[in-house]
Amino acid sequence: MERFTVVTREDEVSLSLGKKIADQLTEQSKVFDNENPEIVISVGGDGTMLHALHQRMHQIESVHFVGIHTGTLGFFTDYEEKEVEQLLEDLISGNPSTEEVQLLEVRRYNGERFESLYAINEARVENIIKTQRIEVFIDDEYLETFRGNGLCVSTQIGSTAYNRSLRGAVLLPSIRAMQLTEVAGIHHKLSRSLSTSLVVPESHVIRFESKSYNDSILCFDHLHVSLDGVDAIEFRLCKKAARFARYRPTSFIKRLNNLY
Ligand code: NAP
Image (cartoon, rainbow, N blue to C red; front, top):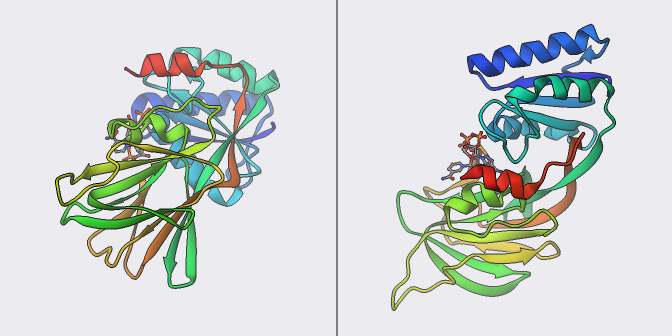
C-alpha cells in the first residue's frame, strides 16, 4: 500500500512515534495522503483507532487500518511501541491479509423515517437523570419491558469494551453476533427484565421502543447524539465492514490475557 496517513493520540510519546513513522515511510517513497489513503496507521490506543475509524467512515470500505499501541497490546492494534521497526518493515515490504470487522448499524426512527449511524464497539441508550423505560423486540417479537439506566448493544469486537464492564460475555472473533446488556436494570417484584446479557446472531434485528426518550442519549463508540423526536431504534449487524491489515497473526487469547 503506497498512500498512507497517520492518526495519533495527543500525547508526547504517540506524537513523536507518529512523526517517526510518517518520516520513515516518506523516505521509503511511500506517499503521505490524508485525503485518499490506502492505509491509516493509528498510533495510541484502541480509543485512537476508534477515532481513526469514524474519521474515515465515508471511505471505510476502501481503506485499511493498522495500529500500534503506545500503552499495552490492544484489540485493534497489532504492534507495541517497542515493535515500531517491525511495523515499518511490514508497511514497507509486507503483504498483509485483510480482516473484516462487521459494523453495527443503528437506525433512529421518527415515524417511518430513519437515519443510520454506524458503530464498531457498541451503541447504547443511557439516561442518568431518570428511569428509562424501553420495550425490547427481537425481529418484531416482544421480549420485555426494561426499566433502568439503559441498554447496550455491542459487537463481537466491542465485547471486551463497555460490554465487559456491564458483565456481558466476551465473544471470540468467529462469533458473528450482537450482545444486549443492561445498564443498571431495576429488578423487583413489579419490574423484571432478563438481567443477563442476550447474544443475538447476526441475522436478527433488535428494536427498542419507548414513549419517551427525554433526557436519554444514544452513545455510539466515543460519539453521541440526542434522541429528541425518536420513537424507535433498531440495531443490526450490516454488510458494511472495517478492514484491518494483518501483517502477522495476533492471537485474540493473547490480547485478552494482556487486558487484565
Ligand atoms: P476511551 O478513553 O477512548 O476508551 C475507554 C477505554 O476503553 C480505554 O481504556 C480503551 O483502550 C478501551 N477500549 C476501547 N475499545 C476497546 C475494545 N474494543 N476492547 C477493549 N477495550 C477497549 O473512551 P471513550 O472515548 O469515552 O469511548 C470509546 C470506547 O470506550 C467506547 O466504545 C466504550 O466501549 C469504551 N468505554 C468503556 C467504558 C467502561 O468500560 N466503563 C466506559 C466508557 C467507554 P485504550 O486505552 O487502548 O484506548
